[in-house]
Image (cartoon, rainbow, N blue to C red; front, side, top):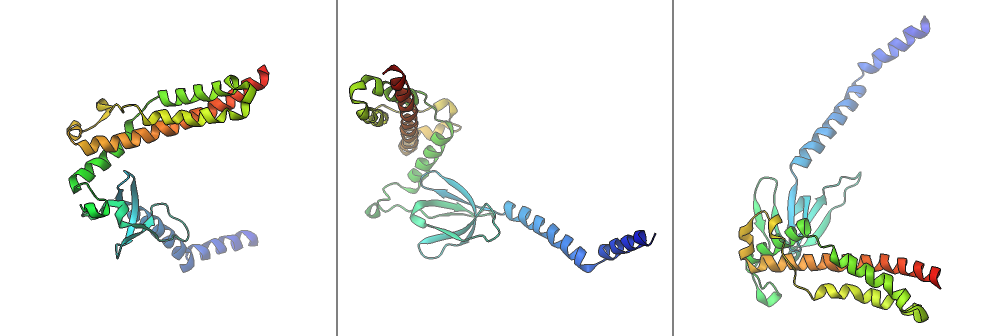
Amino acid sequence: MNVRITAFASVFVLFFSPLFWRGVGEEALAQLQTTSDTAKMDTIFFLNGEIKAVKVVDTVYHLVRFLPEKRTKKPHVQDVEKDRIFSVKFSNGQDRIFYFHDSTIGNVFTIMEAKMFMLGEQEAERSYRNKWPVLIGFAAGAVSPIALANAVVLSPIPAAAAPLHTLIPYIRVNSKAIQNKNYLQYDTYIIGYEKVARKKNFMHALLGAGIGLAAGFGAWAILR
Protein backbone atom coordinates (compact mmCIF):
# COMPACT_ATOMS: atom_id res chain seq x y z
CA MET A 1 0.00 0.00 0.00
CA ASN A 2 2.82 2.38 0.89
CA VAL A 3 4.46 1.57 -2.43
CA ARG A 4 1.31 2.54 -4.35
CA ILE A 5 0.96 5.80 -2.41
CA THR A 6 4.60 6.63 -3.02
CA ALA A 7 4.29 5.91 -6.75
CA PHE A 8 1.10 8.00 -7.00
CA ALA A 9 2.76 10.85 -5.15
CA SER A 10 5.73 10.72 -7.51
CA VAL A 11 3.48 10.91 -10.56
CA PHE A 12 1.46 13.73 -8.96
CA VAL A 13 4.57 15.75 -8.22
CA LEU A 14 5.99 15.13 -11.67
CA PHE A 15 2.73 16.06 -13.39
CA PHE A 16 2.45 19.37 -11.59
CA SER A 17 6.15 20.11 -11.73
CA PRO A 18 7.08 23.29 -13.66
CA LEU A 19 10.01 21.42 -15.18
CA PHE A 20 7.66 18.82 -16.64
CA TRP A 21 5.46 21.38 -18.33
CA ARG A 22 8.46 23.38 -19.37
CA GLY A 23 9.81 20.33 -21.22
CA VAL A 24 6.44 19.64 -22.85
CA GLY A 25 6.12 23.27 -23.84
CA GLU A 26 9.59 23.38 -25.33
CA GLU A 27 8.93 20.23 -27.37
CA ALA A 28 5.64 21.59 -28.68
CA LEU A 29 7.26 24.92 -29.46
CA ALA A 30 10.09 23.18 -31.32
CA GLN A 31 7.58 21.25 -33.44
CA LEU A 32 5.63 24.44 -34.12
CA GLN A 33 8.79 26.29 -35.08
CA THR A 34 9.84 23.47 -37.43
CA THR A 35 6.45 23.58 -39.17
CA SER A 36 6.52 27.35 -39.30
CA ASP A 37 10.09 27.44 -40.61
CA THR A 38 9.25 24.91 -43.32
CA ALA A 39 6.38 27.11 -44.48
CA LYS A 40 8.69 30.12 -44.60
CA MET A 41 11.46 28.69 -46.76
CA ASP A 42 13.01 30.72 -49.53
CA THR A 43 13.74 29.25 -52.97
CA ILE A 44 16.96 29.64 -54.94
CA PHE A 45 16.79 29.18 -58.72
CA PHE A 46 20.22 28.31 -60.09
CA LEU A 47 21.33 29.01 -63.65
CA ASN A 48 21.94 25.27 -64.18
CA GLY A 49 18.24 24.58 -63.59
CA GLU A 50 18.60 23.39 -60.00
CA ILE A 51 16.02 24.54 -57.47
CA LYS A 52 16.81 24.54 -53.77
CA ALA A 53 14.58 25.35 -50.77
CA VAL A 54 16.61 27.21 -48.14
CA LYS A 55 16.42 29.94 -45.54
CA VAL A 56 18.40 32.89 -46.85
CA VAL A 57 20.53 34.57 -44.18
CA ASP A 58 21.93 37.46 -46.20
CA THR A 59 22.91 38.51 -49.72
CA VAL A 60 25.89 40.74 -49.01
CA TYR A 61 28.81 41.21 -51.37
CA HIS A 62 29.09 38.50 -54.06
CA LEU A 63 27.56 35.68 -52.00
CA VAL A 64 24.15 34.43 -50.97
CA ARG A 65 24.40 32.84 -47.54
CA PHE A 66 21.70 30.42 -46.40
CA LEU A 67 20.69 27.63 -44.06
CA PRO A 68 19.81 24.36 -45.84
CA GLU A 69 16.30 22.92 -45.73
CA LYS A 70 17.48 19.76 -43.98
CA ARG A 71 17.75 20.54 -40.29
CA THR A 72 20.64 19.30 -38.16
CA LYS A 73 21.48 19.75 -34.49
CA LYS A 74 24.09 22.33 -35.43
CA PRO A 75 23.01 23.90 -38.74
CA HIS A 76 25.86 25.40 -40.71
CA VAL A 77 25.48 28.45 -42.89
CA GLN A 78 26.33 27.69 -46.51
CA ASP A 79 27.03 30.12 -49.30
CA VAL A 80 26.97 30.27 -53.08
CA GLU A 81 28.27 32.87 -55.49
CA LYS A 82 25.65 35.13 -56.99
CA ASP A 83 26.88 34.51 -60.53
CA ARG A 84 25.56 30.93 -60.23
CA ILE A 85 22.07 32.13 -59.34
CA PHE A 86 19.30 33.39 -61.58
CA SER A 87 16.92 34.52 -58.86
CA VAL A 88 15.68 34.01 -55.31
CA LYS A 89 12.01 33.82 -54.37
CA PHE A 90 11.62 34.83 -50.74
CA SER A 91 8.98 33.42 -48.41
CA ASN A 92 7.12 36.75 -48.42
CA GLY A 93 6.52 36.39 -52.18
CA GLN A 94 9.22 38.84 -53.26
CA ASP A 95 11.39 37.85 -56.24
CA ARG A 96 14.93 39.13 -56.60
CA ILE A 97 16.81 38.54 -59.85
CA PHE A 98 20.58 38.32 -59.50
CA TYR A 99 21.34 37.56 -63.13
CA PHE A 100 22.09 40.50 -65.40
CA HIS A 101 23.02 40.83 -69.04
CA ASP A 102 26.71 41.65 -69.53
CA SER A 103 28.51 39.98 -72.43
CA THR A 104 31.90 41.14 -71.12
CA ILE A 105 31.66 38.64 -68.25
CA GLY A 106 29.96 35.89 -70.24
CA ASN A 107 26.32 36.73 -69.52
CA VAL A 108 25.34 36.78 -73.19
CA PHE A 109 21.63 36.13 -72.62
CA THR A 110 19.10 38.76 -71.69
CA ILE A 111 17.16 38.16 -68.47
CA MET A 112 14.24 36.64 -70.38
CA GLU A 113 16.55 34.46 -72.47
CA ALA A 114 18.36 33.26 -69.34
CA LYS A 115 15.04 32.46 -67.69
CA MET A 116 13.95 30.42 -70.71
CA PHE A 117 17.31 28.63 -70.75
CA MET A 118 16.83 27.69 -67.10
CA LEU A 119 13.26 26.51 -67.69
CA GLY A 120 14.47 24.36 -70.59
CA GLU A 121 17.04 22.73 -68.31
CA GLN A 122 14.37 22.01 -65.70
CA GLU A 123 11.99 20.53 -68.27
CA ALA A 124 14.63 18.19 -69.69
CA GLU A 125 15.58 17.08 -66.20
CA ARG A 126 11.94 16.35 -65.47
CA SER A 127 10.65 14.73 -68.64
CA TYR A 128 13.42 13.77 -71.08
CA ARG A 129 13.79 10.00 -71.57
CA ASN A 130 15.88 8.07 -74.11
CA LYS A 131 16.59 4.35 -73.87
CA TRP A 132 19.05 4.15 -76.77
CA PRO A 133 22.20 5.58 -75.15
CA VAL A 134 22.22 2.99 -72.38
CA LEU A 135 21.51 0.17 -74.86
CA ILE A 136 24.25 1.29 -77.26
CA GLY A 137 26.68 1.71 -74.38
CA PHE A 138 25.83 -1.74 -73.04
CA ALA A 139 26.29 -3.34 -76.47
CA ALA A 140 29.67 -1.66 -76.97
CA GLY A 141 30.85 -2.68 -73.53
CA ALA A 142 29.64 -6.27 -73.83
CA VAL A 143 31.13 -6.87 -77.29
CA SER A 144 34.55 -5.32 -76.58
CA PRO A 145 36.10 -8.15 -74.47
CA ILE A 146 34.91 -10.80 -76.93
CA ALA A 147 35.95 -8.89 -80.06
CA LEU A 148 39.35 -8.15 -78.51
CA ALA A 149 39.82 -11.59 -76.98
CA ASN A 150 43.50 -11.65 -77.95
CA ALA A 151 44.05 -8.20 -76.43
CA VAL A 152 41.37 -8.10 -73.79
CA VAL A 153 43.20 -5.47 -71.75
CA LEU A 154 42.30 -3.00 -74.51
CA SER A 155 38.57 -3.71 -74.32
CA PRO A 156 37.80 -0.80 -71.93
CA ILE A 157 38.87 1.65 -74.65
CA PRO A 158 35.91 1.05 -77.03
CA ALA A 159 33.57 0.92 -74.04
CA ALA A 160 34.85 4.27 -72.76
CA ALA A 161 34.52 5.80 -76.22
CA ALA A 162 30.94 4.60 -76.70
CA PRO A 163 29.30 7.50 -74.77
CA LEU A 164 30.87 9.95 -77.21
CA HIS A 165 28.16 9.09 -79.72
CA THR A 166 25.70 11.08 -77.58
CA LEU A 167 27.47 14.30 -78.57
CA ILE A 168 26.55 13.87 -82.23
CA PRO A 169 22.82 13.27 -82.78
CA TYR A 170 20.08 15.87 -82.77
CA ILE A 171 18.14 16.03 -79.51
CA ARG A 172 14.43 15.56 -80.00
CA VAL A 173 12.37 17.68 -77.64
CA ASN A 174 9.52 15.77 -76.02
CA SER A 175 6.96 18.46 -76.80
CA LYS A 176 4.05 16.37 -75.51
CA ALA A 177 5.46 16.49 -71.98
CA ILE A 178 6.08 20.24 -71.98
CA GLN A 179 3.53 21.99 -69.81
CA ASN A 180 3.71 25.35 -71.58
CA LYS A 181 4.07 24.95 -75.34
CA ASN A 182 4.71 28.69 -75.74
CA TYR A 183 8.21 28.14 -74.35
CA LEU A 184 9.16 26.34 -77.56
CA GLN A 185 9.29 29.64 -79.42
CA TYR A 186 12.37 30.66 -77.42
CA ASP A 187 15.68 29.43 -78.81
CA THR A 188 17.35 29.55 -75.40
CA TYR A 189 14.66 27.25 -74.00
CA ILE A 190 15.61 24.66 -76.62
CA ILE A 191 19.32 25.21 -75.93
CA GLY A 192 18.84 24.65 -72.20
CA TYR A 193 16.72 21.58 -72.88
CA GLU A 194 19.31 20.10 -75.23
CA LYS A 195 22.14 20.75 -72.78
CA VAL A 196 20.57 18.69 -70.00
CA ALA A 197 19.21 16.04 -72.37
CA ARG A 198 22.64 15.49 -73.90
CA LYS A 199 24.21 15.25 -70.46
CA LYS A 200 21.65 12.63 -69.43
CA ASN A 201 22.32 10.67 -72.62
CA PHE A 202 26.06 10.73 -71.98
CA MET A 203 25.75 9.54 -68.37
CA HIS A 204 23.31 6.78 -69.31
CA ALA A 205 25.59 5.61 -72.12
CA LEU A 206 28.53 5.58 -69.72
CA LEU A 207 26.52 3.55 -67.21
CA GLY A 208 25.42 1.11 -69.91
CA ALA A 209 29.01 0.74 -71.15
CA GLY A 210 30.22 -0.04 -67.63
CA ILE A 211 27.56 -2.69 -67.07
CA GLY A 212 28.11 -4.12 -70.55
CA LEU A 213 31.87 -4.27 -70.03
CA ALA A 214 31.40 -6.24 -66.81
CA ALA A 215 29.06 -8.64 -68.62
CA GLY A 216 31.50 -8.91 -71.53
CA PHE A 217 34.38 -9.80 -69.23
CA GLY A 218 32.19 -12.47 -67.65
CA ALA A 219 31.35 -13.94 -71.06
CA TRP A 220 35.01 -13.78 -72.11
CA ALA A 221 36.07 -15.64 -68.96
CA ILE A 222 33.54 -18.41 -69.69
CA LEU A 223 34.34 -18.75 -73.40
CA ARG A 224 38.12 -18.67 -73.28
